[in-house]
Image (cartoon, rainbow, N blue to C red; front, side, top):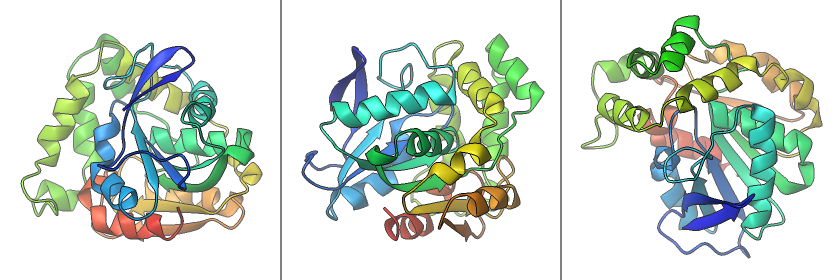
Length: 262
């Protein structure tokens, strides 16, 4: 389905069921360089178990109109506007990586609009390797390769994909290669610049779960401990044999962790 936020078209999927604003809503926010398709293994369950679902493309990503927004704060303001555009008073926000930072910032800025948080692949700070930033700025393939290699856990590099027929490495590269020039750099620079997570965390007033991969090289699970401590009542679930892409690497375990909260 399409929505209009701040005068621009936004693309979203609904998990295979009609979106009903009268039901409790869950909005899924993707990571840097990715799009709504990241969430297809979780959205279907929620959409058929009493939730209305929107897995969105951020501005400038997937099928949503651009330009891409250049800060976590701007994306949080945009997400709050999205909640209103969807006809909702509030929603649970589930974010991955960059999307998790956006969800956190949104909950801190607009507590009345957020009823629960699921933060996947997140840390108190998310610095980006200079080599990745340089490649993204130059629009070379190296950043796509590094994001894919470092994002996938060691176990999945050896095989054993939980979803039959899905080749995670190839899919990651395909989605990343579909970005317009500059989009990946805008996303990574926004993550790199965002240092407010611990400052904003105490303002969160909703149930929160952090879903972490024990083999995550991009946002290592121990780096999330200060954030867990700073968010009132938050809890962490560490998924075994998983890297940064736990939502695809270990979809069932990720779903179990999320559905207990959102």
